[in-house]
Every structure is written in structure tokens, then in C-alpha cells.
Image 1 (tube, rainbow, N blue to C red):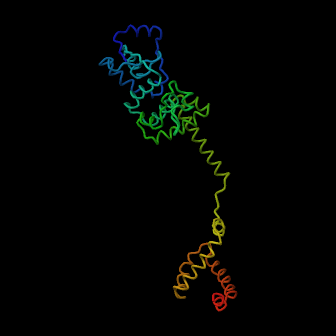
Image 2 (tube, rainbow, N blue to C red; image 1 turned 120 degrees about the vertical axis):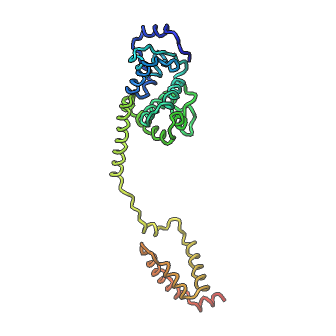
Image 3 (cartoon, rainbow, N blue to C red; image 1 turned 30 degrees about the vertical axis):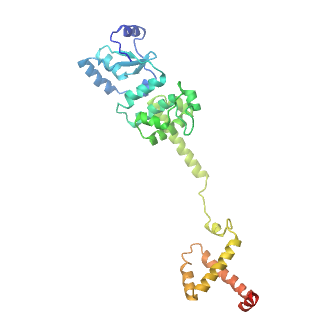
Length: 295
């Protein structure tokens, strides 16, 4: 950008527009009257700084709102320079000149992100860089920033931008809230409305859906993924191992040790049931008869 050292262009513009208007991008930044006062005092003492001209774009002030108002207050002619570039480049310029250099709090950065993301779009995760959202909102859709790129430009953590993006999507999806969120104050109201809506939705879900009741007894008795053709032989094999390798006292001791804890009472119940089954089998399969069959 080239600084205009004479006031010919300025005089022409002032004759057409006595009161300069602010570009929409300029209004994404907070306005602080105390800052205007401080700058006005400095200008009154030292004059308007030549290295800090007011940038204009599309016939409006793009950057330097505080300096412009301070110059008027100090009664000093400000110096203007026309920004030449695309809207995307203008947004990048304002981001660099202000968000990275000024001490904006997170709330102020969040509103700036809301407007910036609406203008530039946000690349969908895993999608191409020309999302439908970008195509509808962005002048230059060749390079839609990702959440990470937005975060880097604003100097915040990517998780922070992820939270902001969730709110932005909900706000912009509601025409009434989207219209309200065009100012910092309106954005606060829209965000509160979104949070209240989420809270009500959660309360409604909590009331309508009963808590899950897990029937452990039913799960334990379920035959799902259990085949008796596998369990039966395994049980017979375990009995054979226990009785051929260990004495009766050791077997009883170990079985008793593993019977507790038994919160559902299934182990003791199974013990008695299996004892009855084994008793019947003992009558059907006497030892002498079985030996004779084997011989």
C-alpha cells in the first residue's frame, strides 16, 4: 500500500463523504472509547503518525477506526491509504494488523472468528477445500481455511476454535439468531440462546428416556455366543484333570475359595444343580459297567 502524502485524494473523498463509514470487516473488531482518548492525546501532542495511516477499502474505513476518531477529536487531518486486494486479502490484513497485535480477549476474538468464518468459510474435516458452505459465503473459494488455520491466524488453541465453530453452525442455521449475531452484543445474545436451547433439549431427553437398567442375571443366563457342544466337553475335561491330578481335599478347598463372592447367587445355585446332574449320571454310568465297555 502507498501512503498518500498530499490531501488531494482526501479532500475529494471528504467532499463526497463528510463522515466516513466503516467497512463491515472493520466492525468485527471491538470499539473502545478509552483507546480513542489515549490516541487523541498522543496526536494532539505529536501529530498524526505517518507510519500508521488509516486503511480504506471499497470507499470505507477498513482499519484504523480508533485512529480516525482520535484524529477528529484532536482536530488533526488523518492520513489515508487505499488497500488494494481481494476481500479475502483484506480480511487477512485486518486479522494480522489487529488480532495478532492488539490485546483482544477471548470473547472479542470469538466474535471476530464468527464473522471471519462466515466470510471465508471453514474447511470440513476430510473434505475438499471448496465446501458448499464456502461456495455460498466466500468471494474467493479457492482456499477455504481449516479450523486449525483459523486458530493459528487468531492465536488461539484449535480446541477453542472447535467450540466456537460448533456455536457458529448452530447460530447461522437459525435465521433469527444469525441476523441478531451481526454485532458483538447480538452475538452474546445469540450464543446464550443456543446454550439455553441445548440445555432444554438435554432436559427433555433426560425426562423422556428412562435410565438403562442392566439385568445382570439375564445376561449371565443368556445362551448367546455359548455352545453346549463346546462347554460340555470342556467341563468333562476339567473334571478329569482335577480328579486324576489332585486329591479330594484340595479340590474341595479350591472350589470353595472360588465360590465367593457370588453377588447374583448363581455359583451356589449352579453347584447344587450340577451336583444333582452328576448324581443322576453316576447311576447311569457306574464305574464297573464303564470299565467293561472300554474293555
